Image (cartoon, rainbow, N blue to C red; front, top):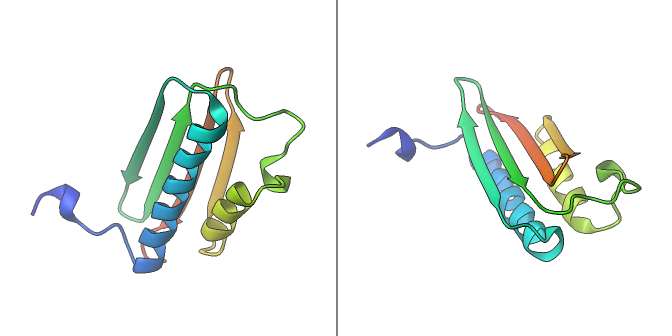
Amino acid sequence: KGPGDQPIGSEPVSKALLRVAQEALVNIHRHAHASHASMVLKRTANRVQLLVSDDGIGMPSAVSPAKARGIGLRGMRHRIEALGRRFEVRNLKQGTRLSAVVPIGA
């Protein structure tokens, strides 16, 4: 097996990251008006970080990702924070960046 064949972590970690990745891509498709999007999964000895970025219109500045009305961002935040880890969404000069960090041993 190659390094890409290694499991990410426990089933709850893998499932949470998969659902966050899916929802992030749906949000980009529906709302961002982006021409490019990227997704990177970084693994270290003790954690996994999912980064999703796009070059779209960003989020309205009045909408705090922590207080978003839709269920998408709240659901993503809940999945990651339920594992006791960090979930962040940031507006960039152009676009949005989402970061979800979970421990491998969660």
